Length: 191
Ligand code: AMP
Image (cartoon, rainbow, N blue to C red):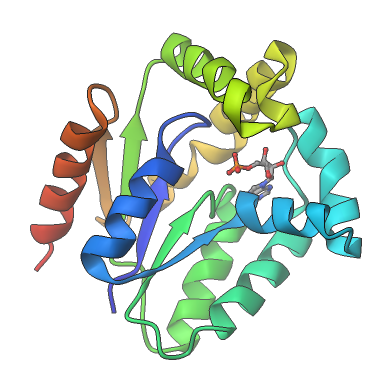
């Protein structure tokens, strides 16, 4: 199996690049933010709980997020592999992911971490707000909080995978195509 963590701050291009990777490598895309938004749209208990955190740019609690992610992985027993997009965002989430995959006799193949300067992230998110309809993209204070939460709680997850020799840093600036090329190259160098 090929199991990739596509990592990076909000606005780094994880969603856009995931689309390219799933078609190239025939993987299942699991984006925790998308799953939460789907639940909000459908008015589920999970959606109602997540919304309060998301609107403020805070993380949904680990217990809830890990349970949801486990259930999503279970839905795809025949998968060739997964792209985890927006997960793990904390060290306990990374540990839970390792445990889950180990129980299926597989593991994370690599973490690809997109790197983009903070000012560019803010500009990208404000621009995305014009089309995404996402409340958390439309407000600069929420954007800044999401970036601060990333720096404090999520960025340390890079060290977790670096300690396993699985971290590749990828320049996330330039054209969409050039970033995709860098990601393909990093994945192809694994085999
Ligand atoms: P995203 O679509 O990845 O930008 O995520 C949007 C929001 O969903 C985040 O700001 C969090 O509130 C929540 N979220 C998504 N993934 C996670 C996660 N792995 N852990 C906790 N909260 C998450």
